[in-house]
Length: 275
Image 1 (cartoon, helix red, strand yellow):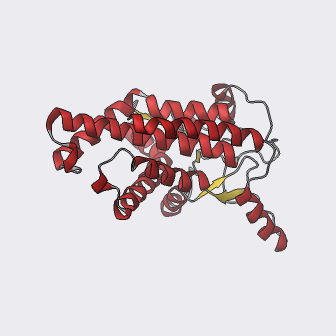
Image 2 (cartoon, helix red, strand yellow):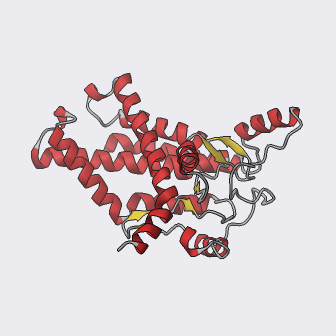
Image 3 (cartoon, helix red, strand yellow):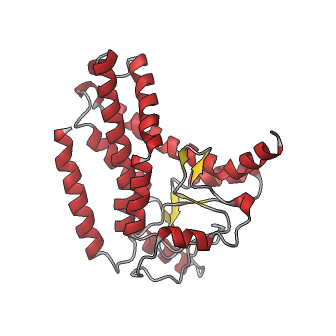
């Protein structure tokens, strides 16, 4: 655990310095997308995103209270289409935006709050406990041992994995790249298209100006988190193949989570009508 602290401190310092120096700088990926679109005589706005952020909102705006802006954005959204803050009263759902809602872009303060909520929610401790118990039972990392000591070895590593990844993907890199990595639900249309759309959000996301761009925060953030994890897992788990497998799993998990969020209002409505 101690070996991990220098990385965390360096990450926080780097994020603060980078965010400050880039406050009024265009996102490099957005610039590339815009250049291609402009050369073809087309707009680079997020035409395919049903509820993209307001493209006219300036990047350097003063942040408002997240709860207030969320309530205001949901006023025009039918109750049956709204995304709850928790699914089944357990699963945190702070990153989902209801279909049709157009909230302002999240600034560093709101992004940090969401990352913290996702990391230290009571359900996170339970989830890591369950996955750690399964991993210990399957002897996924033999060098971590068995029994209570082995379970603890799995638990704290799993919790650091989850927390580290959350702060990179939700707060640090979005602040630097000016990306809005919340999941904007589609809410209607053919189920197959909605599923593909939801899963693809790990690759595509809007920036602060509502322009479609590569989801660098997700792709780089998960990679950075996996790279850091090699400092506290046994040497046998530091191979390229092992790290690549964990990286792919993290992306697939996020894609599956987005898909579940997309269809949750439909599932909830079905459950309400079929007790």
